[in-house]
Image (cartoon, rainbow, N blue to C red; front, side, top):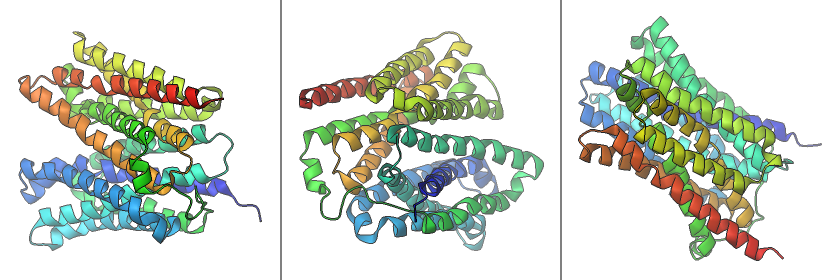
Length: 395
């Protein structure tokens, strides 16, 4: 029977939506956790730290163990852990004497699921016999953006209509998506990128100079995206002097919408465009966006730079993965896991640098955002070096 890889694509789309739920739902409840459980804001900040740190550890361990356990078992486990963490979040804080410990435990559980999704979905898509893989990869990653938009908008609507106090019900409703996707990943066709025993080892990857350029590319991709995305709400509020609700919609929500539009555009027309040139153009646009957001005296121009940054960074992460697959065809699961780790590392470094520079500048977010220009600038340089290597290898 002919295999239906369309079902695999749908499962991967829902996988990225699951990851978007895991990454974006709890932050909407930070002030609610503070008021309901009496948790200091200093501890609340640890929720995001635990989420991203656990995801980083998962990326690292996946490089070693995923091939031994198998793609299907691991990706099904990713959805099960994501659902368990979300459902646990609805109940465990009230059941434990220390609610904060319950929250952190649940966040850690669904962070493992999120990390496995990040490592596995890209190679699963890459291994499918789609005609235009680079375009399909970009389209698949767009579902993270649409998932993030849906979580922000639908959760805000739920809180306004049903009430913020019923958030545990919403956590269970969001858990339905990974629960359904357990069945999808259990039954869809899943192929492997490289035959058993023929993929590069971690040692071989670490000894390859080109791999380190790809790592630099992923670090810059993650940093370029999240340095702006994580600070978009606060930046918009401070620049436009608007409420948090308006700031969330005009900042991170608009950023995610434009990022999703860009990925859909590349998914539709990417097969007609040279990926490396498109990414270089995106990197240059991203430099302009950071400069505009950081230097513009007009609040409207500052918002435009922030929002258009979402459009410019869209292809960086999926594009870097596609370039890596093309450059190191036998990289295998270990390569995808280490690249995910590099992207997450960049996602930690970027927002951290913006926050540090802003603090040293007396709380000036514009100065912090302006410092983020270094990441797309280095990304463009790395792409030019990779382009030079590829041309030298061509006959």
